[in-house]
Image (cartoon, rainbow, N blue to C red; front, side):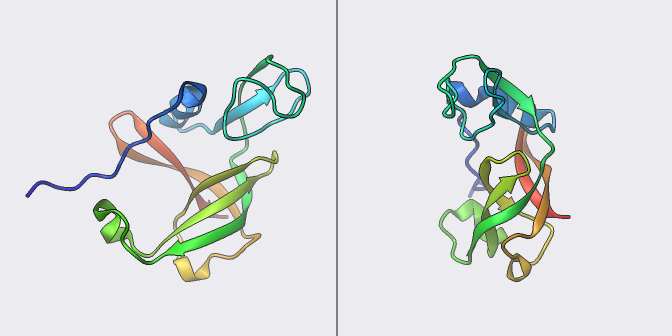
Length: 135
C-alpha cells in the first residue's frame, strides 16, 4: 500500500504571491497602496477603500491566537500521526487574521491571546506552509 500524502495548497490566482513568498519563508499579505490597509484572504481590490492599487507586502509574522479548535479525530488519513492538532485564527500585528496551525506546543496548552510568530513547514518540493509557534 502506498503512503497517503497530505493535500497540497492549490492557489487561486489572487493568492499566488502569498504562496510564492511562503516558499521563500516570507509572510506577505495583500496591502493597499491607496489607504495603507492590509487584509486576508487575498483579493484583487482593497476591501477597505475598493482601490485596485494593491500588491503584497512582507509583514512581521507576529500576532496572537484569536480563536482556535483542537482536532482529535482523523478526518484525512494523512493527518493520523498528528492528532491531536490545533487549527487557529491568528490575528497578525498588522490586523488581518489568518487560519493556520499552532505548532511547537502541546495542544492542551494553547490559549486565546497567546503571542505567536510565523514558522514555515516545507511540506513538499517548492511548497511551504506558514504555521505559528508560541513566542
